[in-house]
Amino acid sequence: MSLFWLLVSLVAHAGPPVQIVVGGATVVAEIAETRAERAMGLMGRAALATDHGMLFVYPDSAPRSFWMKNTPLPLSIAFLDATGRVVHMADMKPMSTEKVESVHPAMYALEMERGWFVAHQVQVGQRVAGLPSSAGE
Image (cartoon, rainbow, N blue to C red; front, side, top):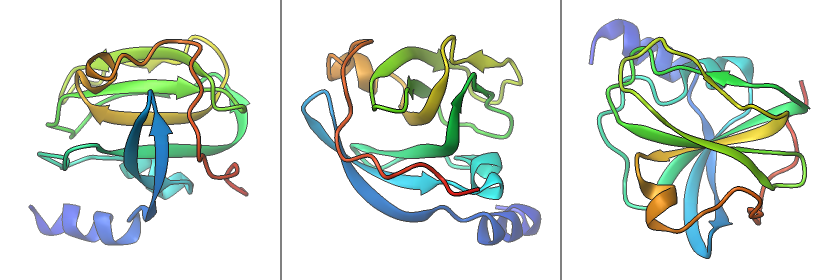
């Protein structure tokens, strides 16, 4: 890891992880709730532990868009509304600047290793339990 990425990760380190329940499975999710944490996301990560991911928390519901610039790890994303209901899911391409849109307003986004949602039979419309309250920006 370059010195630049080390410094960025120290400044934008995600908050302590929380346990949430997704499709009947318990997930340990790092929280990204500040602008800096959300901008950094999982950049530079080559792997995630089993059933670990990153939960992006926003102060409001709005259309969201993600990309995978500087992220070599293949990921899937689930966008969630303010009630924790999955409103859209998509696979993302490593190192891509192609935008992945939420399609519907979302207050949360959960990134997991690619294929995790399919493997755990997560469907649009399901609710995620244990979500933290929205970010206070």
